Image (cartoon, rainbow, N blue to C red; front, side, top):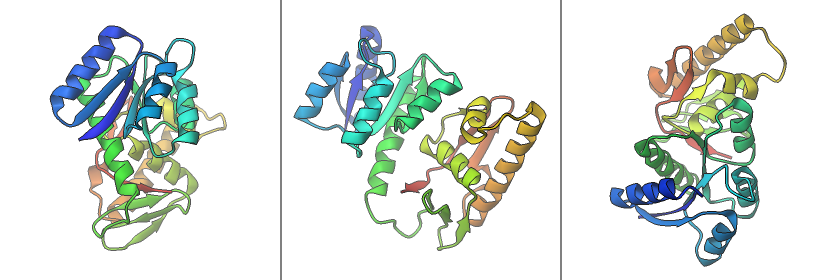
Length: 233
């Protein structure tokens, strides 16, 4: 079983999350209502993953995530927030979150993302085994099942990293605009550029043995990654 620490100040939601995760049979669950209680729990035992509300009293969950990533880099961090605008999500990812879920999130989705974060962290902590498709953002290298290597551009790598951090979770078009294009671009130019970027990345993923549907599109909304990819430093 995996250890999860839930930090949520809204009592009904906190209790509902605890009940659902415990009933799944995969989790040892602890729960707290604020950052101070969270820190006390970390002294006792570090969890595999933290489910962290952004809108906590006295201290932002984003600030806590940044502190945790600096002090306990191996802990998985899943942020849960009622604020889903691109700048809010961008702040969460910059703080070091592994995933960013928007309230109200389905309980099944929350559990799936928590499980994915833990499994990915454990896979990254062990040597890559034959049969794993992996991506190193530092080197921009995508490595396939049989050792094939595809060099990604910086923008292709950034897109892959954002999508693969949270498999199964929709990443909205406006979030991708904020993350991948720092300059102002017209809507028509942006959408054409994003379409071309996704097409090129899909082609390289297929060359490394991932299926054509590894990047799924939800027209007018965004993209989501449908498979697990080993993310390396």
